Length: 205
Image (cartoon, one colour):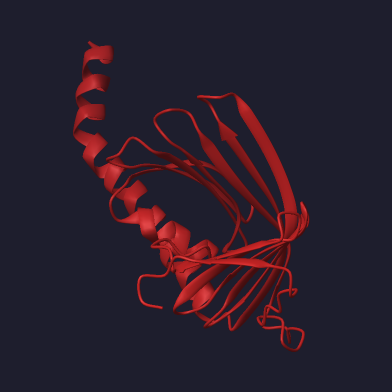
């Protein structure tokens, strides 16, 4: 009888528990967005890990991420000299080994940590995976069967992992985060060597 009664009570309490969990997640999300709304400049080291399951290829890169309200720069230390620069209108990918720069329209998803989460948040099922101290781990499940794992520490994103339904994944890990620090002069100006081959694929050149 006690077991049957417990099952009834759990059934009655489950919607309340789920609602409470949703409230906690929304509060975490809103606090994270509020923190990033105060960011005028951002600087961090990052590790980027990619895996392509179909061809069983793994790649790891490291570098620095800088951005302000209008620009974003990913400066790779591995591979050396590679850069990705985005502004309000277009994106430039520069590869010094290939001596090539590709200029294209701005991508739909912004690479700023808070913008990455916002792109998926409202359309996803959400789960609080773990919480210890000021660090929270959250899992999102999108309608397209993507799984996203997010780690937030002190209301800043420190890890973002996207896994698609084919088990391909990309992971970004951020460390040494500094906000509202004066960035180097002309950091968002990309000067290309004279021998660079430029491929411009913008729709409106």
